[in-house]
Every structure is written in structure tokens, then in C-alpha cells.
Length: 155
Image (tube, rainbow, N blue to C red):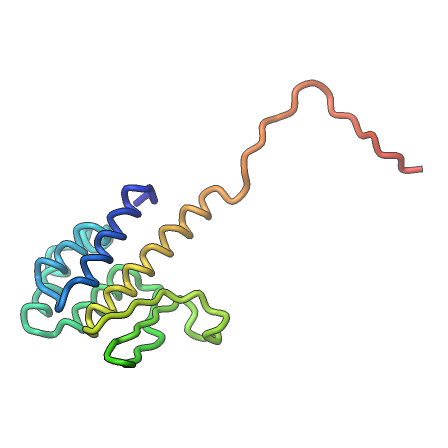
């Protein structure tokens, strides 16, 4: 999945929709899977059905964690705090590092599962940005025309 402006806009729109939502619905989780979960889409229907079954049975936090585990297995739940009427979720690739040194993906919401999903979208965004950065770490420079001459005086 390439990182382009259109995909970045889809992530932002989905993040806004999560913040407006009061709770996870099967429609909302299906939209998240369809837009930002290529790994899960490539798997059998049973994997998607398992997550939607979690939502339909009321185990929405389990659905969000199962989505995280299947789509971004390198990201782990680092911190989950309830403060001032809001859940704060932090995901990390490097759980062993001190929090100050870690580049975490964070999300918050009044609903626990939506806070986890919000952090999931932030992690997805960071993963796509990192993949795009790794693709061309050094700018390509053309070969010089003519002759290269060293003008340094080594005497």
C-alpha cells in the first residue's frame, strides 16, 4: 500500500469519524478494515468475521485489539489510561524503551475501543510514513558530465 495524499486524507476522514462516534458498530469496523487494513483483507473471511463477531457480541475492545494484532503485529499496547472522562491509548513498536525515547502512536476517546482504534490509525499512519521514507533515503544524483578533477592541494 503506497502512501499518497489520497490515502492520508482517507486516514484523516476515518479519524474524524472515530472521534464523532459514540461506540463501535459493525459498519464502522468494516469501514476501517476496508480502508486501512490490506493485510486483513488478504486473509480469509474468517479473520474479518471474527472481528465483526466481537463487535456484534459487545466485545468491542477485544475487536480493536484483534484488529491491531492481525494488521500491525509489530505494534503493542504500551499504555492505557482513563483520565478526566477520557481513555488515552498508546501503542509502541519498542515497549522496552523508556517512554520519553519511544515514538508512540497515541489516541484518545471517551470510549475505550474507539481510543484503541484511534491509536491504531495513528500507528498505521506512522508505519506508512516510515515505509515511504525508507524507500528513498538518499536522493539520486546523476553522473557528472565531462571529467572530474581533484583541485585539493595535498602538499
